[in-house]
Length: 178
Ligand code: ASP
Image (cartoon, rainbow, N blue to C red; front, top):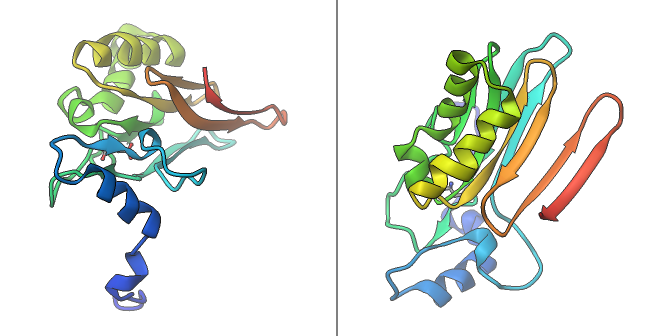
């Protein structure tokens, strides 16, 4: 950590985020960055999954967090198995949404387990988790995934999810709503 530059607190200030919080503070509710309507700019969650030429899988999630969340709250994004997971034998998964149910359901790992123990495809495993298991516990959100053969899936049970995909055949998808 010695050679990493440190920034002052001002560096992390965002007027956009501050305005979101002004709308929510004093209420008991919290909102995902993509649910709060404030202008066109989106600075929220960024998740990525990748499969290299050798079938190595990787996942990363940088949370946009939730507005008006409890001070000190840790969401699902940095918890391996909950919001982020990669295993060369099954899949790489990155999640977005209300983190608490994703943590309770160990969501990203659950997709991997369904593939490993039940022999499901990536899409079928993700479909069960996103459209059945998460919905039953009010887990709103979605996930992106890729398996070791390069099959990808981008599923969500929320109104929309900013998402993109590309492969070595130059197929490209960019989408927001269903
Ligand atoms: N899953 C994140 C959390 O609960 C929110 C997000 O999607 O960025 O903290």
